[in-house]
Image (cartoon, rainbow over all chains, first blue to last red; front, side):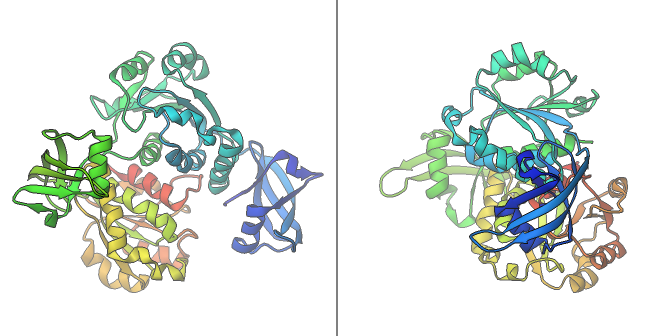
Length: 239
Length: 239
């Protein structure tokens, strides 16, 4: 945790209170003491610093109170993602990394080769995925919370919604074949990256994306697992 | 698994035999049948294709025999790594990804902030880490097995061994501060990347690396977890 983030409801009269994992981290990893200054912030809000004003030991879990001063804006997201989700186990590992890397909106789409039972995954409940995203933000030291959307009908989403939701011209679809990697970098602006399922996009899906301005991009001859590929793609296509 | 790899001892008279995870993958994911052709190869050896000649069901685990024809060279590694290892749990997740990404030699070094008990980890036994590396190769479709070395004395390793072991001039140390990111790309040749522990390099360690020709490189303002950062660095610094 390179920044301790609080939910707005955890801050009262300029004093934030936390227990559980964050308190344990402050005390055991950061060796927190009263008077010590930490990097802090509000989930999806401003960031700044905080001074530890009280540590309440005892009980199951210690409790830490921090006087916070949040008046800076955190780093803004720089890209969005249309993702045909991998298995929930992989997705769970991926979400904090996407938050760390600065993704704004993640639209999970029902491409043909997405496993049907993915859509019943408990991970899709906000109370389950939100903490994973917040973990990624605390790791990166940022605060802008990615939005997670689901669109099971991939065709309808691309045809009817995508252009309005993402008005950028810099659109890239990750696809190992027939690609012109360099073309992807030509357009300016915020990146919209489309990444297929573990079995790949179908030809029809790639064509549909191309007809909406997406340019093919390949990472080369080595075939990477979805989570590795996503980190690699965002790093390659980042500033 | 985008290529099924066999140990040399698993191939006899041009026929490879496998059971367990690979056999299950061939049958359930690739829907393998007698006569079907697969991408195959030898761990740390040549690659090619194989034709399924026999499937023996029954017992605990099915067994698959494949007539193989391995006469191509796999992709060669393009970089090496000096890594102050993260916790074994993170390292375990990282090893297959490093194999997938084309790392040649991985030297695990005892930088100051590496946890002392790392060196007793069972993961450091070849029988434990080798399957993780092979998994990464089968994912990527390549066969060149990374070598894993350990050097607990970081100073002695850099001073006495590094130059002979890695005669490349393209040396980059990942470090968030005071860096000139562009400088890292100036030298040509095989990449040698040094990545610090979760708590970072000490100033002395960075100075020592710099005195051996390493150039600082930063991924930017977002602080990434070691495994995310490594994938990001290799993607940025790759061809």
